[in-house]
Length: 379
Image (tube, rainbow, N blue to C red; front, side, top):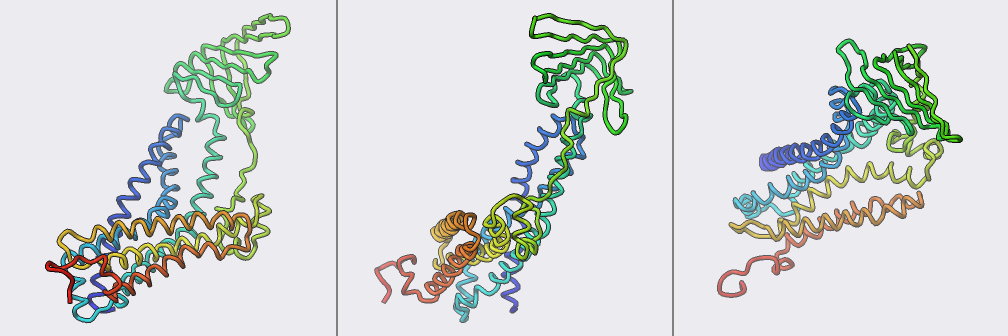
């Protein structure tokens, strides 16, 4: 690479890093706020919230990379055009096909980042996130240790604690069990404790009252007790955690053992093919986003007001490519043999780039985009 190529590449990478950082922060904070409300409401500590937000980070970065690649390419190209640097390089003999070289390198670097995310980091983080969510949902103790709120840890169960002492004593406890509609039971006690016993958790209530309502004859039976043990482990499902989701599978398994993956996840072969080839297509889309943005901006000549018309055109071209991406996904999901359609948006973007570069290299084709000089058409 020449010095100018390295200069352009460095500019692209700096602006890409800036846009990626800003966009990741926006998307990540949006996810983190919703996750914070849900986890803290369930009585989880702060470190669980930090762990969960960290596990969602690869997925957020995967969404942001193509957008940041496009934004970085457009911003740098606009600045080089406004400051006449591209005009000077074209005057020295650099054709649009030559100028696109550092942009291709820039796109390939981001595509490699995206490949690492889609093939390794995102499947691993999603798998770990699902496993941790299942473990958290089975932690009945964390769900119950919330004072001053009526909790519903399971359908038909209502639990309330007025106060929790520093030594772990639960004061003024109320437990309503309405799972048996014919005989609902309500327990109240002045003091209670959560005790781990035999691999399960029991609520030991001291000096309390049990009220059993018989719906058949509408009679209420009350029982005073000095101490009573209630097994709350049964309130939580102990089903095995399934990690057979197609998004957790390795790319090699998706490509070479699609039947096994589909059978394990209970899905169609089309969904397996879509997941496998979409991982490659998303990486290639990073190259397309960068080259389309750059090539479109080459159509405008020097202007102190920038090339905003070309920027808008590049944006709509990228939106059109994403629309094609959405259209081809349906047939592939229905028929695995149609997986080559997933690369149609990438091929369309590559063709658009070549057309735009050709038009930029032949000013006669882009005269309608260029500003006319004062006094009429150029001779």
